[in-house]
Length: 287
Image (cartoon, rainbow, N blue to C red; front, side):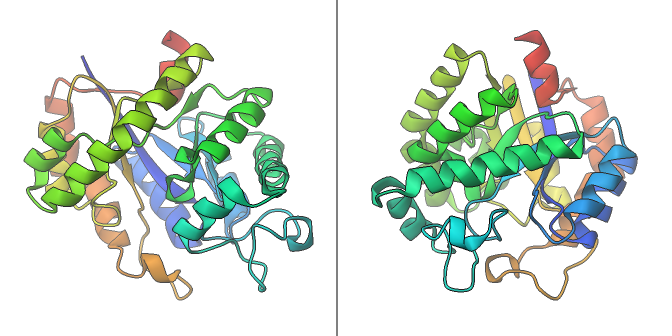
């Protein structure tokens, strides 16, 4: 059986993102969104989500490429001199693993983000992280520990399978193969650990290699190649770009991703397929 979760990351990042999430849920195929709790437009995102009870909202833990929730002086190992979280993912990964005392700072920031989500009053549908940083063994262990205290029922496994991904798009063959081959052992271990803890997860994702460029044609191709199991198709939609977009996202086709979610061809293709739409909360209820 083919099950599909359609989600949007970075809910709360800007008003443009928030509006796109709301419209894509009301008028398109979007079922879930992942909320940044310390982003510039978080409060507005929460207000929109409260008015959309059918939109399933999860926590998008931010430990890199963003602003922390805690004061910088409380987490000096996580921030730069301007108080922003580290932007270099490789350097962050090394620091999270080797730097003395950083585990306590990570746990404090992660706990603060879970607490902020709880304070929103929104039901917690799932958890993932900015730039998939929850794949890092130190971060994953802390999210698992803290998340269980806050009732986590589902966590994203960012595994994009080479075969279906390559057949869909026929671009970036080596990147798709390396991503699948190098991550598979650790992601498999994560999935088994989640299962032992009674936490649901997906089997596959589409959108890693084409992040920021999940246009209608790509989405239609991916829908034709959704494998058996649970696949998450994730997006970064926005109505338009905005002035303070971070460097790594300036090339994203935000509006194109939004249009894909409301494209009548995409809606009709999904409706005509044998794919069953679900959410992480739906997976948790039947596990």
